[in-house]
Image (cartoon, rainbow, N blue to C red; front, side):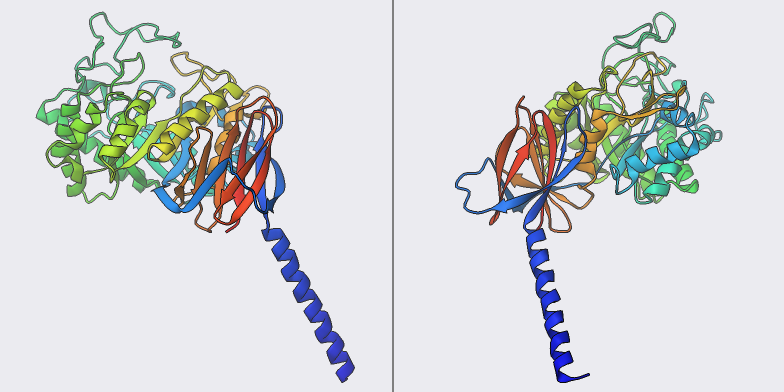
Length: 481
């Protein structure tokens, strides 16, 4: 090769290197904007960084880390699996990818019932043999045909999915009224309520569990066997919460506990049983729907119970107490365990309600946040007749799949915010959340509540951007480090 050719080759290389750096520089100076409105979902665009913005609408302090994020997801229930089973295999696979893949919602944490929930096909537990205190007849045979196949399809897409469990009711023979429910007849929107005998109702917050030692020991063993049985089936549970909606008396599976009794059960039976069986599964107090923070205080301050508890899960009415508990017990993890379920409207009003709750819980210390039923059929009905919302609606007759507005609300956060990321400090406001991602990017989620388009000015360190927001839109803005 002649000197002239070498010179030309080097000149060409320099040109491409310079152009490469110019292109990267230009690309790096743009932020990603993803927007969803009631009529248009998941619209992507780029926005340029600006210079010398005098005032900002939102300032993000990316180095001021708040709580670590543990996970975001939803709930597996029997009726959801029944709906998915009606779909062709390829269509069902698309739903699982939409919920659990990196291209979809990228869910990282989900919930299952331990025994029957209100979205089970019928009442059941893992041991319905009365007074089997040694748990000889314990089994998860029903789950092997319904919940576990549901879980395993999700785990195929995301093997790192974290799963936790809670019971709606102990086995009926362990309860004072020896029935799965607490109330008879129709109740609120549940129009197909149970018909338990007169006098069997428990309509206050007295403990509905039989507090004799043999029942308490058996119930602790019941939890341990459940964790071990699921592990044997290839599904490891990262945590359990001993009772769903601990202060509620509906006409579906339920069981109230006084805080003193729940503390006694965890401290003297459940915690020691898990320790004896060398289980790594965490115990969380929950799900707490009591608005009075004294409920959680009473449990956390009981004897040595804190050494067994990793966190507290709050649900519905518990929203009123999470702020106080976050301030008084800063070292304990917090979770929002069930998004409000709606009335099967599945529209933008659901997004607005869920957005307010999302902001409230995360701004008050929650590191994890759960939707309720991820998938339901076109009726949305529970076994007790209450039609509720879902992220995915499956029409079992036409085989049509619809992704609801709330699906996109959750995708706006869960696709990007993963375990190990952090909420970060930002300027005050009810309609945004800011996160520091592990790759160094900052993610801002913001809701334009106004009926008209507007632009907001955002500052992150020495970077500033003006984001155009559609009217009534949920937006995710990703800013490179």
